[in-house]
Length: 457
Image (tube, rainbow, N blue to C red; front, top):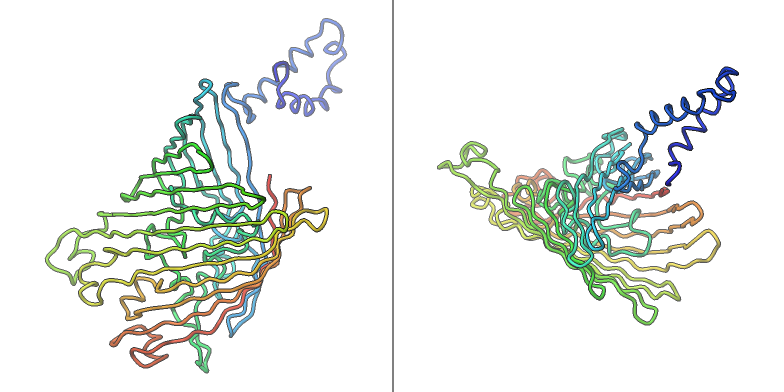
């Protein structure tokens, strides 16, 4: 605004209450009321978020999301209040951009996440995990050309981060997706155990990415932003691509497509992530049983792909995602010598339903989901003799969008089941107590019901 900024108007409103106490001389002709008011407005503007140097814009966006999660592990039932999961929790994003010329612009992104109760860390014995944590999720600057694309440098998502996740256009991806947010840290109970004792094995160990970057779950094996350099191409005929390289010698490539044909929306993505970290340590020091001493690498990769199809008039939709891990050198030489090369794991996830506007509130989404994680056992389970594993999930849900409030609410039921197969000579406690060596060990199902909401701003 050329004559008076928004912050000045707000400041004037705040100061309005103080004008009534000004002296009669200040309010009279020739007084200094206006000069005094302008001085105080200038002081407030100096400490108020605004357009800065009048060249760089500032946009504030984000959402607040919370849910109540009811669970039953076959032994105990309880309910927790918390976040839907890491990266889906409440956050605020500050985005700025300035035009350099008709083609080029520069800007920045500062994404701050506010976690009140981290879903990934919840368990039967922890109902308030990692609470009240504020962290910088992304922080980077960028240069963007309409014809050449965008280059970003800093802490940001790599090219493969959430590549398959973001294809889901049904409006139900927050409460229902392939990442094991709901029960990741919950202890498993062996099927048939009359004592219902909880084991040290968690559900997340059956959807492990082998610590590709320390946190990934399920198909999202480049699970968090990292310090990197990322390039995004412009969109050509619905096609676009991205590439990134950063810390831990990690790199990623991805390609995307989005279009509509005869009232049918189509979206697809494919991405590959690789990490080659040679800073793990020295054999013989970090792993004393290995000699002679020497450096070793842990190299692994992950492929993911997804597709989404929706018939717009009827609202019928179908979403599918697939991912595969490549554990080339994930284990140390002594681990490979003892147990062999770790099996490459894979997983798939399917979702189908209808998205239709049946009321003035907004679209209603009804859906069913099914997914599997195969041979995605953690490195620790592999070394203890778990040769293969299977985790199956299915669920039903409804999402109601409330357009007038930029909001959605959800009601979702999910079931998870799992089993593992033991190698001869396995040392895993579940193998020893749950089945003969070389046999299968089953676990009790866990049921999850979630009621939650998200409001964007």
